[in-house]
Every structure is written in structure tokens, then in C-alpha cells.
Length: 247
Image 1 (spheres, rainbow, N blue to C red):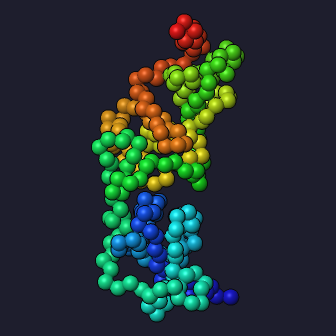
Image 2 (spheres, rainbow, N blue to C red; image 1 turned 60 degrees about the vertical axis):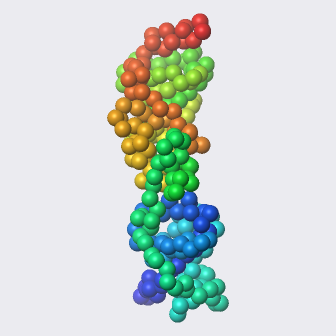
């Protein structure tokens, strides 16, 4: 049976309240989308059939998708139109309309009109972990049991009451693992909500590439100087542990 091509000939429109404009950053790189706005609504058009059923759209708050038929907008599979097509709208490509600009103060905030906090979300792809953060008190009695060859390529530093190990192979300790993206250490299984945010954050807060940005799932981060990392060894750990006990 020949494939039904009617789905590919459909024209899809959509609307979303202006108050939810912040969420559109997740589809900002869909350059085929045209966008415009009135006082209360953001209008979009140009979605492909594949995009119209994508998970990215399903996750947008208060997002309504329509099919355009004879100048009328129908909700998906609806027999009765919801509204007429708006006329006199000024359309702009979405990647040009939604420009990412960093405000001058809050280091954990960027924005479309300065409205969007930095968020991490669970990613679809899995990447190899390159860092491990674990409580020192949970590993201090296990360090001496580690074969020397597993330590040779590791660097480390102290983060409050935790040890951050960087390098592979990772030690088999309980803790939180991280993967590397453009100089960011992101929790395993998580990525930035907006795909093009990674390099923008580096440009803004790590221009000289002399730091690593260690992120939490809640969108906060710790800036770590690369020069503060030192080669890991059992003796360096013991000396650090003694210093902690004296404090």
C-alpha cells in the first residue's frame, strides 16, 4: 500500500500565551518556524508533520496546535474549527525573534527579555561520566584499598565536605557522577533545557576557559579553577583528611 502523503501537506499553526514565552527556547533552533505576537498570544506556523507530534511540543505549557483548513484553524482531529486565521500578522523566524541575552547581574539567569532561569532537564542521550562527587566520610576508609594504576590519571579537589574526582576510569565509590560538555560538568542523565545555552554560558562566565562549571540539577553551579585541581594520590588524600580533622 502506498504511503498516505496527506499528513505531509497539512499546514500547522500554534499558539501559546505570552506569559509562557520562556518555554519556547527549547524549540528555538527549529528555523523553519515563523513566529509573531499580539498582546496576549504568541502565534507560530510552519511546523513539519514530524515536529507536530514531537515530545518538545508536548512539553510546552498551554501550547495549542492547529491544522489550517480553508482559512480556519482546527485542533488536531477536530471536526469543528476553533477560530479563524488571524490576518495582518508580521512573521519572523523563531531563531531571530527569540534572542538569548544575558542580564548583567544574576549569574544563574539568562533571558528572552530577561525572563528565563537556567534549567537542566533529563536528556535523551547518555554520555560517559568523567567526574565523581562523593562524601569524604563515606570513602576515607576505602582509599587505601584502591590499586595505584586506578589513581594515576585522576585529579581532585575538596568541595565542602565532598571530594570531586576528575578523570577516567572513575573510582567505584558511591556518589554523583558528571559528564563534560563545553567545559561544563553536568549531572549524568541531565542536559541544559536549551540546546544552544552551553556555549553562551561559557562565553559569559568562562571567557578564558580556565574554570570548570560544576552544575546541580536545580540550575545552580560552582565555578572551579582548573589550577586548583591536583593529581590524586593516597598520600595527598591522607594529608587533606588530617588537615580537615585539625580545623
